[in-house]
Amino acid sequence: MDDLIRQRKNPTHQMTEKGRAIEEESFRLVDLEAGPHGFSPLEWPLVRRMIHATADFEYKEITRFSPGSVEAGLHALQGGARILVDARMIACGLNPERLRLFGNEVVELLSHPEVVARAKATGGTRAEAAVRYAEEKGLLEGAIVGVGNAPTFLLALVEAVRRGARPALVLGMPVGFVNVLEAKQALMEAPVPWIVTEGRKGGSTLVVAALHALLRLAADGGVDTSRAYREG
Image (tube, rainbow, N blue to C red; front, side, top):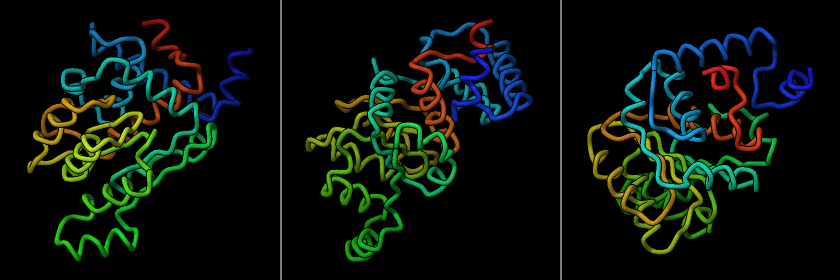
């Protein structure tokens, strides 16, 4: 009963009993089909939710974590860190109730008038201009950065890190064909905590799924409380 009351009060859990049952059964089936894996108890909830969001079990094979990356993300979220994203789709996909739990603000800059003006003036991409603007305004420091759309955003972010910017965690999951592999490899060599989907696969949906998993873990004190995981 105490667990049920806690779940109802916790906005990272489904609001209704039926919703929770469907989610937990989905996670149980993912665990069952995924089988053995080498992810830690903090890493697997992210991979599982990414699989759940896409029905694509290849993410079990291509998702990589730098040491301590999940812990860094949880600490940042619990401290109210902003979440900087490269696509409005990510911002729209994040649950406002879950964000309010720790006061995490979502920032998307590609549509910012100054960013648009800079991109037009330089001939570069809005993604590159957005990173530069965020760096100048100090928005990268201690932030969680989610990249699901633009490899140029990720490459510019890595350059900012090399200049001294220090995000708390970078989710490097852009999808595509041009500069995708190079951008992800550059992130994995950068001095910052990261979570990456290797290869061409990725997308805003993946970033949303990973962030929701992190928010749930943060709310539950770093413990995966889903029935699927406990019984798996």
